Every structure is written in structure tokens, then in C-alpha cells.
Image (tube, rainbow, N blue to C red; front, side, top):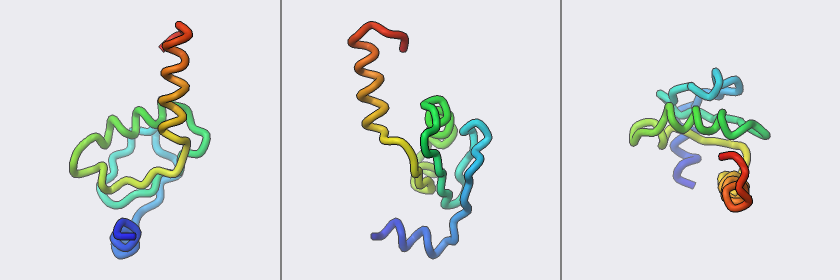
Length: 81
């Protein structure tokens, strides 16, 4: 896989504690976010939402599609967003 080869060549840093998710990826970075809340993902993506930073991120964590499905279900049922 091309991404794996690129990451291996650059010796990525690993961030397990992501400062409330507000960590900027300035080099290839692995974010391990198993069972973390949606706010942490939102903060991380917001901080890195650029053409320069997104390609440097590898996120291991909850399913984004699962989050989307739960969000849509709450909206349909009329719960808080």
C-alpha cells in the first residue's frame, strides 16, 4: 500500500494523548482514538482540515460511518444535535 510505504519511510510520530484533539499534524502522525467521543474527532479534524495536514494523518478509532448513522438517527427521532 502506497500510504504505508510513505509513512514507513518518514518514521511517523505517534500521538496517544492529543490535547483535547487540537493537535496539528506537521509530519506523518498516527492518532489512536479508540472509543473516544465525537468532540475529540471534531477537534482533531477541525485543527487539521487542510490539504497540507490531512494527508499526514492516520486515524485508528471509531467508525465515521457509525457516527454519521447515530447522528442521523438522533435527528430523525428529534433528539439533541
